[in-house]
Length: 126
Image 1 (cartoon, helix red, strand yellow):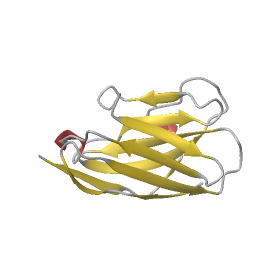
Image 2 (cartoon, rainbow, N blue to C red; image 1 turned 90 degrees about the horizontal axis):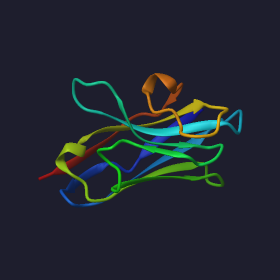
Image 3 (tube, rainbow, N blue to C red; image 1 turned 60 degrees about the vertical axis):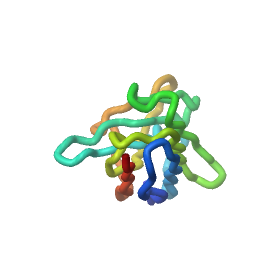
């Protein structure tokens, strides 16, 4: 799967951003798709993930109530709507896919995902 992330930028604390991931090359209907972020010197962490089989979602505790992941099958895009952004949300954000034949909560660890897009920088100023 080829993934192209966009939508990052600089925003003030309390502001909003919408990240978009354009996907192509799916070979199956059974995928999980996730947004991850990486802080300097840290490993990537799962932020929000969605199971394409039943639209179950996962959100990291730090973003619950502020971030929303959604999937548009017709446009083959995955969107991460982020509101009430905080300086601690500053990171490089990545979208990724996992060939996932199960229903229920999607995987949320980076090693469970095979294909990755390039990152997009999100910077939240205080």
